[in-house]
Length: 168
View 1 (cartoon, helix red, strand yellow):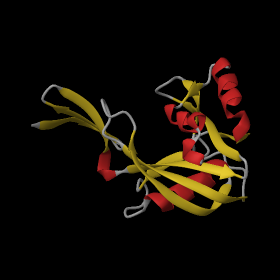
View 2 (cartoon, one colour):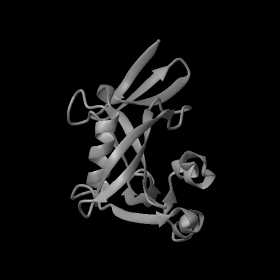
View 3 (cartoon, rainbow, N blue to C red):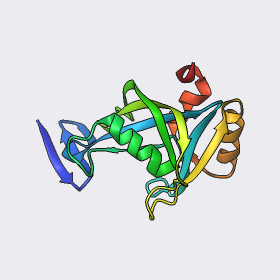
């Protein structure tokens, strides 16, 4: 029997027998974007409170946090432009994946964004402080290593880029 022990605007803490885990509140989902511009990938770097560090990540955002009925692809297009300043000519789903299934029930839609056009500076909302990076794919391993050496946290989803098969 599961029991909600705490619920906030975005997260719910649940105890189910011996398991304790977190889920997204209000049915909110997430979209994570692999955005490629020619031979480069678009990454974002921003401060993450739970880590206490800046973090290098794929662009991403919540689905349906502001408007009910928003689709993952629509959210991905919105978040890509807001965070990076790029608008995608084509967005396709690569499927649903789970963030950390031992402690979080969150599922995210991984999408591929191509045919990019730069329409703005990006940077997210005023309080996000997002830095946008356009990194040539051939330099991705060195770029990630440099950021790690600078003390920047590295999102595990960047392993997709290091493995290379997602872009093939």
